[in-house]
Length: 77
Image 1: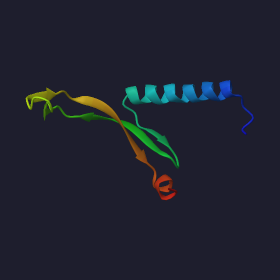
Image 2: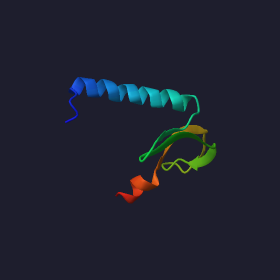
Image 3: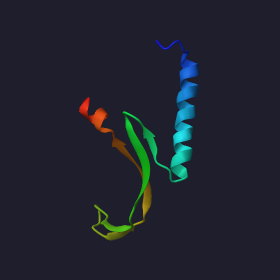
C-alpha cells in the first residue's frame, strides 16, 4: 500500500499517460529506466489484398507506437 487513494492513483496515472501522449505527438521518445521506451514509427504505404475478394488495395502510411522493453525488464521475465 502506497498510502494513496484510488482516485489519487487514477489521477496520477492519467496525468502520466497524457504526458506520454504529448511527448509522442511531438515526435519525442519516452523512456522509463528499467522498463522500456515508447516511440512513434511510421509504416510505409503498401499494397495489400482484400481477403474476401482477392482485389489489390492500397494501404496508406500510418503512425504506430512501438514499445521496446529494457534489457533488465526482459531478463526479469
